[in-house]
Image 1 (cartoon, helix red, strand yellow):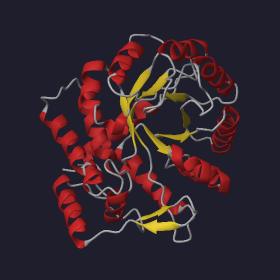
Image 2 (image 1 turned 180 degrees about the vertical axis):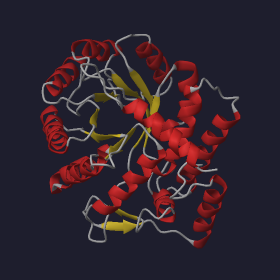
Image 3 (image 1 turned 60 degrees about the horizontal axis):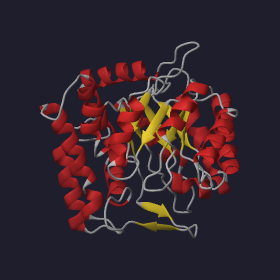
Image 4 (image 1 turned 45 degrees about the vertical axis):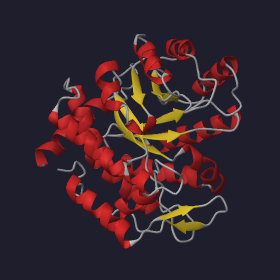
Length: 350
């Protein structure tokens, strides 16, 4: 396992390096952190850092925080910038720097709101010297290609960081492929990375269209990475973005095998991916909302890994509620963790 750990760190160094005068290299797994809360409904910064350290140890290419749905409330309390500041300071800690890139989500109801958040991220990066990036879907008020391209051009004027453009999950209209390529031509050190998760059958076709253009550097799989084995091997995506940080080590194993040219018949690739699906399925079995719960039972996984203190989530009313679990539910999660073999010391599993 020590050998796997060393290989993952070497790989992370390779995928996070920045050449002088050239665009950054962003690829590999970019897990979103699950936001931890205190009993007082405040951001638990020490736990957030501990979670980031666990993900970093697995050898990922980037660490993303927070989720788009949390940004508004976090920004309103000052916790958005404070959390990013703490993550960046830890990532840039002398002698213990992260190999992965801290990546901030910068959405907004309006273009101005999103760009204001970009400025905050830029300031954090300059204060700390940390390697950072931005993940930016179009703002909510961008209703056509003209307003979308205007937003991204304005955004590029406010940051020196690489920006991953995120397409909408189920919303219309999408940023056109030609728009994304045009931005990558105009701002080659800012754009050229895409998290592609257009709805339905569009997603694979758009990935192929994007990757046929030399201006596009990396396309990331979305949708919980559930299409990644196919998209990574047959289409050419070079990473995945998903809010499943507890399984970051399994993502690294998948990426390593895909990078080696493995396809779905490869035993190691199949083992890592199916173990991930085995754990992600807990969000279907124990979901309050129908399927694909990304907190819920996964909060208990983070507890069992010794990272989270509790299973609390902050509500829209600004209060916390616990994800309740019966003994039967806990026994099921524990059994799956035992099979998969993920521990705090060994994020890669068996």
